Amino acid sequence: MKNWINIINKRSLALLTVCFMLVASACTKDLNPYNLPDADPAQYERGNREGVIKILAIGNSFSEDAIESHLYELAKEKNMKVIIANMYIGGASLEVHKENVERSIPAYDYRKIGLDGQKKVYPKVSLDLAVEDEYWDYISFQQVSQNSGQLETIKNSLPAVYSYVKSKIKNPGVKYVYHQTWAYAQNSTHSGFTNYKNDQMEMYKAIVNVSKEVKNIVPIDIIVPSGTAIQNGRTSVVEDNFTRDGYHLAIPLGRYTAACTWFEKLFNTSVVGMKYRPEGVSSFEASIAQNAAHLAVLKPYEVTEMIDFQGGDGGPLLTPVLIDFGNATKSPSWNQISSFTEGSKINLKDSANSYVGVSLTITKRFNSINTNGATGTVTPLNMPDNVSARNFFGNAKGVFNGIVTPESMFVLGGLDKNLTYNMCFFGSRIAGGNRATKYTVTGSNEGTASINTASNSTEIACINNIKPGADGKIKVTVTAGEGNDTGQGFYYLNAAKLTSNN
Image 1 (cartoon, rainbow, N blue to C red):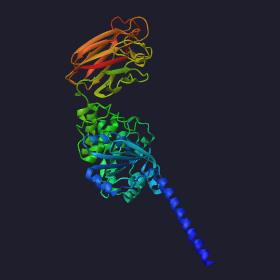
Image 2 (image 1 turned 180 degrees about the horizontal axis):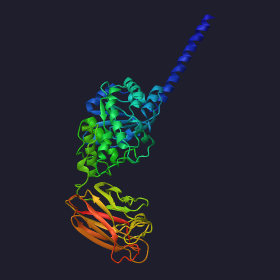
Image 3 (image 1 turned 60 degrees about the horizontal axis):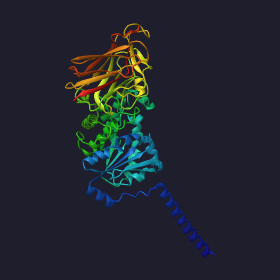
Image 4 (image 1 turned 120 degrees about the vertical axis):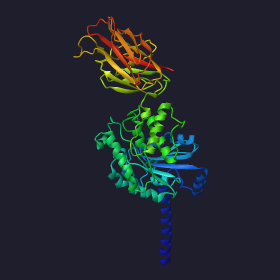
């Protein structure tokens, strides 16, 4: 009887062992669905000999903005071999990362850019698999943007994430990075902006204070000052246009600025003057991004005003600058200023969508916006209907909407004082009679032209060879022209084109 019991026990034990192995195998396959290998020591040694640099970010969409675009290409220009990866969860905080490591949750998109520059995305990956996938040279942490200036949130979660990562790393020489993210645009509607009283500089200063203190929480080796780079850039002619939605970086200029910051800080190589720039970034914009990053690396905890990039020496315009005075749907290649009141300002781009270092500011208001301009126009401006059909208008003689606007004016600033410029204007209001509108362009010299804007669909007024004043500015005055027979002296401005004489 005892023999039978022993046999049964042995068989049961064997069966249980097999079952356990099958379950363990299934679990392992579940947790590693892409069969990502553990880092291979031989591969690490080979990578070291070949100079491969491996970077892993544990982050969210802000690390996506910073390293998934352009960092590989910058490294390639300097003949650096890199592997770049991002453990991505949209909106993930350090608290979320802490929970994920404590519960081994496979919640990440593991986004990996290989030596060939191609990105592969592995969904539903746990953090340990990514950490053990390569002998990483750099591993970065960051806090979710709305809490990035709140030190206590980092103290509460970063140590656990750091300790977990440290327990899994294969490269004992890994450098730990903290990514200093950026403050929101001043007009951001992100709900987390209220943590900083909806004040950009308050948010920036709080982020800086955190990045100064984070090394006292865990042994961080490197701070990448993306936030300071973006804030530097905001002192240039680009101003507060480095984000696409008030918090994520603009594509491509904002992302390029952050990538330049990562490149210079990690590789200790100045990015200024590098040739690589993304499609859609002009050489002038690239210089802004590169210098903003370089200055941030030099002074990571304070804003450096970019006085050399505030207009005035941008050189000739490579393509025309087209300006839409109205509030219809914005057209590609056109700058739209939709506010007609004093102080309204935009930074202008050329028709290739690149900033040119020139600003437009309304200095004397128009009365309002009229929506009855001509459509189907035939002029050298080649306007789409949503540009030609709306205008800023004024009334030089009689009261309308409770006011009189004898003349309206805007100023173009940041022009190259060594060049001369040409301006063409289009005005139109579907109506009878004579609605003559006079345009005067004044720099160190002056020119004037007029057109009858009543039901105009073909005529433009051009003034050529105007040299900016000593301050790099040209002012444009719009008022009723000779022969205007409307009782209120209505005048109109729908569109304008600026070119330079090279």
